[in-house]
Image (cartoon, rainbow, N blue to C red; front, side):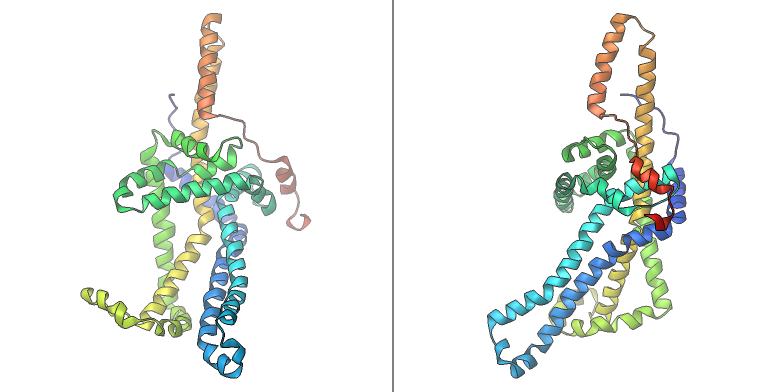
Length: 350
């Protein structure tokens, strides 16, 4: 099916996406706080308390003989880890939900000029929880195969074609998880180069430039030097002599200080990537709408032309449109009226 030339370039998409993100930065940041920091806090509790328990176990055994029992040790570890795991699991799930909810927020920002009512946007995903989990499982399986060196090139190509699966899920309610992949491929078909360029720009900007910039800033302000000692005690327990043997071939000697600073940099990377998820989702939503509108415009024009033809030709055109709509599943997409109503209220009214 022929499509019109897309009006918006990727530069306009990036500019518009950056504008929406900056104007609603405080709202998006507030929304992403727990999904990002909840995971860090949960993992920090699990590893921190487990490390403290392992270091304190000899003293506990000497003071309390009951701890000198394998069952007691295992039960204690479980009790120590469960709270942190629950916090991490909740943050991780909220982060997955954000992939769909942020698309709805972008639609809301375009419609009303505001980002509001997080629960209503989350409901876009949670009301179809099972389908959303299946979508993530399919995407995870695809990712696992893609990281195998033999499939790197093929995986990258299909990753570009499947980059809009979460936008399709958010806006096209009747599409199944399997169909999200096919629909994304149909939308991007013929626009691979532009989509790939947009993907590269967003990846370099949010995954590399921003994370490296924040790391440099932390080093300049001596913040890294203040945080790193927290991890040095743990790094001292690692078998560094064995680890340094393979690294010695590259003249790299691992030290507790080096490991602790690298952990700080990894945490910075995770925070930056997580907190900038709204910007990436905004840009991909705008790109999806751009591609979608091109299909709808062409479909509308073909419908208009078919009305002026003879009755015999009209029948053929209708049959063609029926097949075409079945393939692309074009449907009217409207934002929830309840969300629009709440947009007119003040922040403290809902």
